Length: 116
Image (cartoon, rainbow, N blue to C red):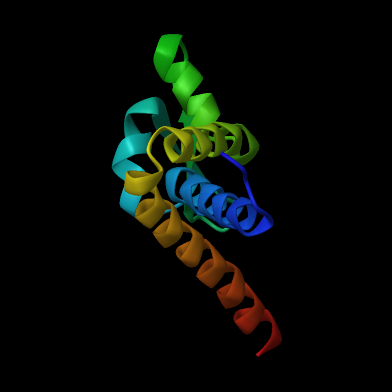
């Protein structure tokens, strides 16, 4: 299957959005939660700061480290998107397209907030 430039851009945007979804978005917090320990520290003004550190051992440590690294998760998200596209283009195309549109909308929102 040939990848056109437009397909490449769509796959890239969908990978970007899937990565952001897994690493940062509140809606997927339940996926990340089992792999992190919550640490609270009081800062110099008396407020409590909350940090999330990967678990200490085993598979949970591996997944915690993976999910705390945007670049690492991005590789796996891209591999998943491309594999899904090659295995089942009919099923994957709507999902990939939704992720790509959402990814582009995220990028546009950053520009709107920055320049307007």
